[in-house]
Length: 639
Ligand code: 7RM
Image 1 (spheres, helix red, strand yellow):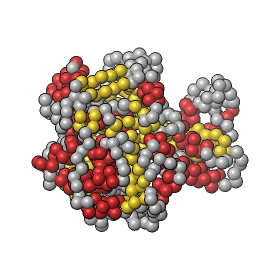
Image 2 (cartoon, protein in one colour):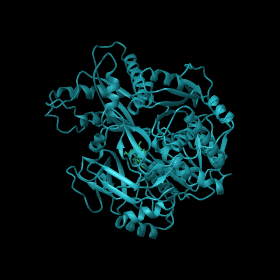
Image 3 (cartoon, protein in one colour):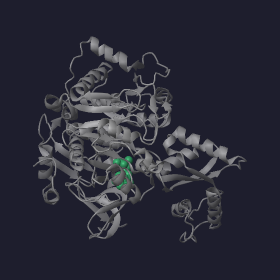
């Protein structure tokens, strides 16, 4: 069996086969990878505990699949093209050969600094090639990476470092993003005041901002590289890993206040990201593939690094932001590097669309053959703009639905092979068995129905546990509905059997494609000294998809409410990061609560949406009068 599915007829046949004979199907997919030793058993599983083991007995290293195995044939092919924040700075190209050399070199740096298989390493770097090198070097020696997105605060870093007991942090002096500079090392320094487990910090120079370097703890990346060079640059053979050894931890938000460390393991994740990447995008040998995500999120892990590299693709990474120096930057990059496949988020499409077509006109986008979107539902207007202005009506758009927990795409078109409909993720990839259930866990069969989206059979890329707390993994994903993985998403299956994701059914927001828990934001707001209580909901936002709306009870009446709003925003930035700042803060004297003290979010959501015509039944409220006050306040805030 070929790895790439080539026709709709083949898709249907293989899909059927993957359901009837899943182990045979996945074994055939896995044959396309390099194993030091093959598996004894393809799959062992139960969703009760859960206990999920793929390719037991197999031994491998994912970096051997991403690097070593390509070098003979593709040694001089660009593996990574790096486009800097500032268009006037030179771009960089790392061929497969060069990337392997650099990964081996940095693997030796990690070893020189006492890092061994199983150790946890926190990576807090800007979008530079060294981030890819650091990630792969960890994987090469069997250290478990935990990448933290550069937009998170010192407190968030500390929480993540402590949760995983990281021994090492890899960061940079600073990072460039548009006109801003982010003082990464200084943020790490603030975090480390709370972190006992960290013995060493490796600091890359990027912005050359002055930084504090603590003797015995902090070392420069460049100095450590020189040491390896004086050792004669010895090779660093890849550590042989067991299939189910941990590859990485990535924190993600849920309905509680504390982010979970999603755990992915070596073999299944490798097979799944490679298989889904090559299929959904139908990657061709000389194509340049550009994913605009940050490596701090799962999209960057799976579809800038591991998926493309395991397939020998050229992966373009971009340090900057889509709207600087102007809203034509992505199109300049496409033109400059002759990008063939572009993968971005609906929020970026909407903001570039809003900037005006003049930023697209005159740019040569003729190289584009395929387009992709991810992270949130895409509205029809943005889909058509993307299709017409960027794809010129000739590039299929793959709307890839997946999650941090799924490792890779579950429901997605296969470019040019399966059909597409605006706003639809379409059909499950072979190997994926979605099901819709009602509130009671009853399967909703047939077409033209909607329900809660679950998956009824394991796939290799799925979450194995939440780090340090397996029970939490069971409760969150496997106990809501018996024997099913629950995604947290609502979903429609139309008359044709096509899937359309309608959004989260839990208290998770999706702001510009970033996952943020309402409870997390509430906790942060409540840290502010003048806040008694708060309730956070999402509301439709034209560019961000969802905006954050906070209803806040303050302990005293402030004459300058705007200043208090700014104080609250500062608090949220400090506790979580600027990405979680509320877009709107409304001061209220009370919140709509039931007699048992539960906040009725349904009512707050309606008010935040600006739709107060029908708030539903409010008679069970402790104090129904508070609703009118909140409605009035909301109208005033809207102006
Ligand atoms: C890849 C990623 C996951 C949540 C997920 C959905 C939403 C993701 C789509 C989508 C509609 C899509 N991982 N989501 N992709 N909604 N269409 N194509 O985003 O863990 O950060 O978020 O994002 O709600 O549950 S994530």
